[in-house]
Image (cartoon, rainbow, N blue to C red; front, side, top):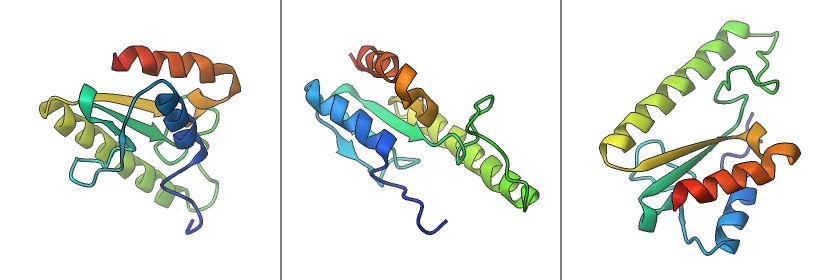
Length: 124
């Protein structure tokens, strides 16, 4: 687990490249906001979280498979992450931020273009 990256992941880089190419300027991983959003668009008061399907427990996703060993430990870890995500999102909405959550599976080949267009429409 120590080799798993938390920043500059491939899905994150895809979104950042798209945003920059379309003229959006952003900040990264602001620590003073709840949940440390992956991408912050201050001009639009919008935040983007890019969640890994496994680490954040994406329900109904084929990439979210609970490991067969230490199952209880993994379930607790993933459940705690989901609770923390919901709490952060509520706090951010109270602060009048628009929150966009993108799942790793939505940035795969078939859905990539559709997801990026949805992001563009959601921001403006």
